[in-house]
Image 1 (tube, rainbow, N blue to C red):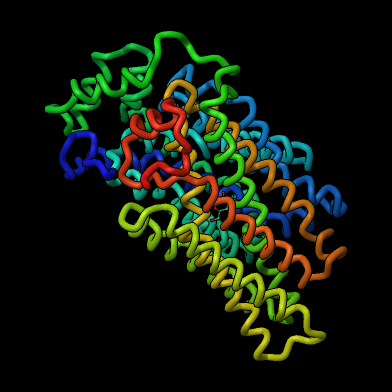
Image 2 (cartoon, rainbow, N blue to C red):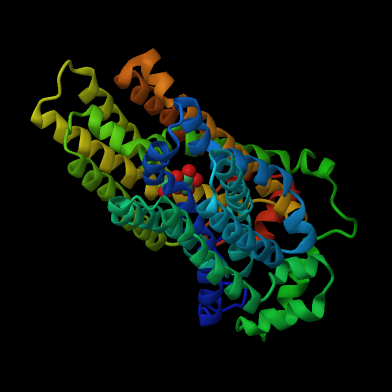
Length: 461
Ligand code: BGC
């Protein structure tokens, strides 16, 4: 059953948009700080003359940090509140960026990149969590996906900054620029309110009511508070509860979606696009960079399309369409590379396949993984449960990024892309069997469905 928004009307207060936009700056930092290394590494290599192993260490430091950040911060957002945690990560982002920019040794760079990674690990789940909790159900998909839109914008901006600064060898500036959105995030979040749902979980009813009315929900604030309160039981949730039988299915969906978002190969394209274009036989540096920028732009544009569709046609249809597109494009990419030599026509097929793949990811697994994990967990343990799915996401990301070149050695280029295609087929089956449709549902309704012991997949049917 579809429900009206929590205020009982379908109008959305401008204040909600501003709040979501500011929190989504965390996504911009996520995208920028993961993307910037692809350009910076070239100059770091020149200056510090490091080996391939150290290069791998510098590139993957952020991913390692993100796994650690997501793992150790599990209960922070539940204990200290969403807003305060985002403020702390904004400081870490800014400090890490300045530290990396001022580093004089490779080990200093690695340490600061790990710190930035930790900020990404925490912010990557706290920002969508916070946005989800301030959003009315009929626009929650679009508002939470603003975070993904910002991730894709951050990636494009990082490519652009790398490109502009490449002529001047300024790897320090490449890192330092990341401090700017961090400071804006910090100031912005200081001016915003805490999530009303988290406030209720702390029994701070007066403040929760105030925030709800700021969000234009004055009339229904009391009704809303009662609903949120009902979803909480008196005693504090423990880690053990996270694995209790009624929550397990949601945990499984989160970790499963994390697996499929990463092991279908997205970051082999995001991190290695120029290498893939080189494999396809583009010798000119300029063409490779242009094609890579194209990948970034398609990613942004199709995320906008997803935002437009996500609350209209729902999450599951988009997952099916997107995953089917990913399977087809990976199949073609593998085919192009299975031939002994790429003719001009096949080069075009390779580039089009990459673009089609990115477009398919951007309307499906890209935004929907982060969205669904912000929706399906019970309020009491939402922060902790999201941090587990997020840790899985970064762990799988690290695994894929560090095995891609080895996979190519073992299976060949065609084999590697076909492998990701097969995993994508598994993704469709997984979505069909386990993933719920959360479109239009209140968070409290989703929680009640789980609590009643109903099959998660039947939600929204
Ligand atoms: C993924 C990242 C990926 C990005 C690309 C995000 O949803 O978690 O791993 O690099 O999308 O747009």
